[in-house]
Structure formats: structure tokens, C-alpha cells
Image 1: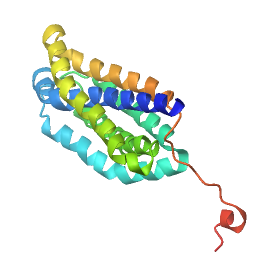
Image 2 (image 1 turned 180 degrees about the vertical axis):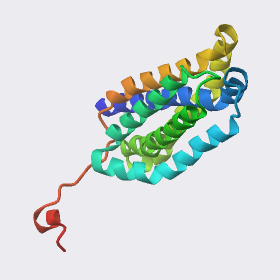
Image 3 (image 1 turned 135 degrees about the vertical axis):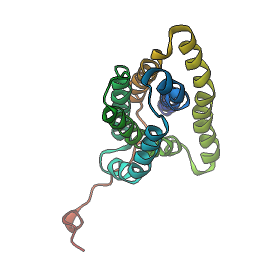
Length: 199
């Protein structure tokens, strides 16, 4: 029962952070042109580049401190990036937007490289396909729904709602992820000469 609760919570977390991140990536072109009066291609490329560079370090960090703590740190970075985005205007310095998207890219890598292993960690070898299906159902459903939902809110409340929308979903993902109790890495304690790295 406890593992099922953890599975539900992590799937909810996956859906929530995809709601936030995918809303920004799918609507930022319109937002940048109308609110910031700036080119949007470069900033999105910076986020993707930062993510690519961060995938390997994110996995290494998780092996040391655990997947859950690493993911929570990634969500905090993602929330921070989106929160800063709430206050950016056409007169804001371009480097601030650049830094925000680099931070979002690092955060996205930190989250994603560790979330899928947490899901499959909760199953036996025979169920890996089924649990992979759970993961992609949560992520893909969010990616389908959030452009529609965020677009509707932008039509009703104005385009400035984009980053607050993304920040709220990142914050909610932190809450659900905080209560996940299973699927983390199992760090094996070294003993004797092995602890001193003596072969």
C-alpha cells in the first residue's frame, strides 16, 4: 500500500512539472513576441543546451544524495526560474532571461534523469513495461492538456499569466514529490579497507 501511494504521488509530480514546463516551452514564442519584444529561439536553445550538459552530473549527484533530494532540488530551481519570469518585462536585461532559461534547463535535466528510474524502481523486472507505461501516460497526458489549458487562461486573463501558471505547477510538484517514500537509490555502505578506497 505504501509503495502504491508513492507511485501515485510521483506520477502526480510528473504530471504537475510537465504542466508547468511544457506550458512555457509551448507558449513562450507567443509570450516573448508580445510581452518581451525579444527573439525566443535563442533562449529555448539555451535551456535545451543546459539540460543536455546537466544530464550526466544530475545522475552522479543522485547517486550520492539520492534521487528524491536531487529531484526536489531540481523543482526548487525550476520554480525559481519561473518565479523570476513572472517579473520580467520588455525593459528587463536580456542576460536575466538568459540566466533564467539556463537555470530552467539545468532543473529540467535534474528532474527528468531521476524521475523515470524512481518509477521503475518500484516494480519487479516483469512489470517494467507496465510501469514505463504509467510514467509516459502521466507525462504525455500533461503535455497534451497543458498547452490547451494554459492557452485558455492566457486568452481569458492575458499573456502575463504564463509564468505564474508554470510556477504554481512547479510548486505543487514539490509538495507531492516531498511525500514520496519509495523508489530512491539504495546507497550501499562501504566497509573495512573498501571505505578507504584501498584495493
